[in-house]
Length: 544
Image (cartoon, rainbow, N blue to C red; front, side):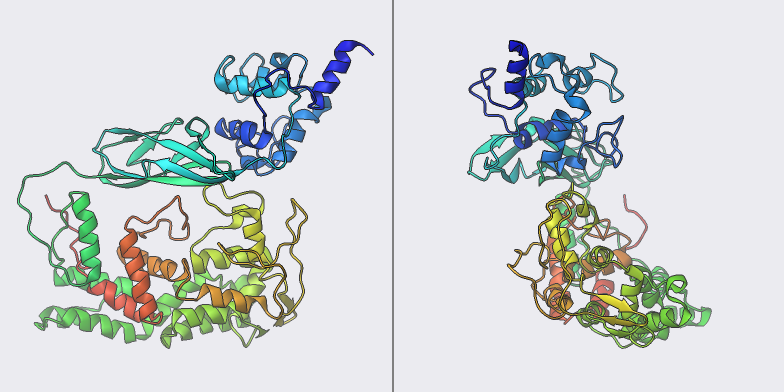
């Protein structure tokens, strides 16, 4: 056998490291970040479901073993040439030496190009399976007040499982959550624009994420500002944030503006002429609070809020039929009419069983149909967390993995619909389709138990979800109600709660969630508090 062929075989086997004896390459730690950094494994390139031009990578690099196999073994091994690494099709494509639909991604001779070339030269190994993995990500600085049209360079540090720390700024990916306030370059340079506000910039690296917060205040104005009144804790916490932004709130709205606003927000209709005249003629100082109380008792309140939640909980007459859809809607409307505590409302939904035409919330499981759809839909509505994309790969903007997703799915795997009847109990095995390993039921952020629970797993999920200590439930409900009355959530979108999409006022969100919990999840009490605040009663007319 020719000596060159033998040498190539040894290199492919990863047995020769003479090309760089000081470097122990690891595909997941060294090569996968480059495929992510240059968007090779994005859904717009080789990461999409069918791949691109015969070459497919796992989206966002969730399956390093499959990605290495695609590079080294597929297409008759022609993508990698250890005997002459610079002639490898992979390097010639990314450097633009041969036609590449994605254009030049990594120029020849750069440090990143050399990393790939040296990895190929030693046989393109996967690396030590026990090598340290990234355990956490840190961004420096974490928060800063920046003037308009100013810049801040970010530094991203990865901490590995062996406690080693490495600067990974060059290979991290960055994203601004509000490009109207600040832009971020591929290398982590944040540039603010000409609007005041609060912006978060996400950095991600090998499945870990970290967030930088920038507060961009208005330029100082020497004009004298009048102190705004504070009616409750909401006003105090909002004023603290406005002070950081150098923003002075508008004055209070007049009675006519408040009347129109509170009617539309609370019961979804406008006041009649006689109702408007009566309110405007009333000279009682407490008339606004009394009006809110009167509206909360009207039947239209239950109608309006049932309509909102019927959309969220998928009351679908086309899928359910008239009788079942009506039973489902009636349960929702009766819950709001009776001022059922929101934790009990959620528990009844989560643990529903029985005949669909009699037990309204059973129909959610008829519409959702599959355990994965049940888990992702309920997570989004009740917790404000989107987990659906973790079904196929690690969440690109959050910490949720496939095991986290299938841990949630496992709560609903035993659910069965037989004709009109929903039943559940023991049984129903959930596996991670990528690893084929069993995944036992566990909630987001919780450790997986050694075995599945007996009985209806949904009851355990309901216990966790509605607990006052749950980090998502009360905050999500408070945020949704705040968004309804103020027009925008403290977390926006309201169903996209994650570390890389932080609330604009964390202290306020925490206070609202505590207020809701202390009120035993009384929706009406939360509405009273929000509508009694000066913030809600502020005029829509801007000041100077």
